[in-house]
Length: 140
Image (cartoon, rainbow, N blue to C red; front, side, top):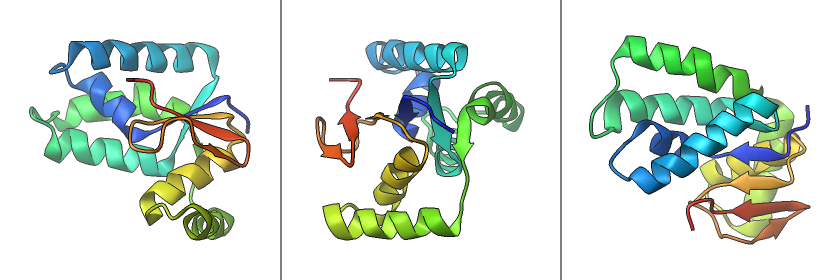
């Protein structure tokens, strides 16, 4: 399992939400390229967070059938990291070392477990390097 980019949940939220056309365009390119090249991945956590936002928290919530289609066409093909004992231990190590909250630490641990060099997220510190992983805010 090795992809160059790990994609955080916020990219998929912007992909689904058309209130900010610029961010939606950036997200569209990331998702399209990730699916086409296989050079991007996500974790089970991103799938869960994305579906939760899309079904319940979005300005216009997705109907269940549309969420299922998005899951099958976009999220599942990108999912490479599943829950495991070692992933949780690594997330705790990330939290202890860099003081991220646990959910963010789990995202970082997942990107590291996938062997990614870049974590695309607007929620973490742009430019920070963690064990060979660089955080990049694609919406800057």
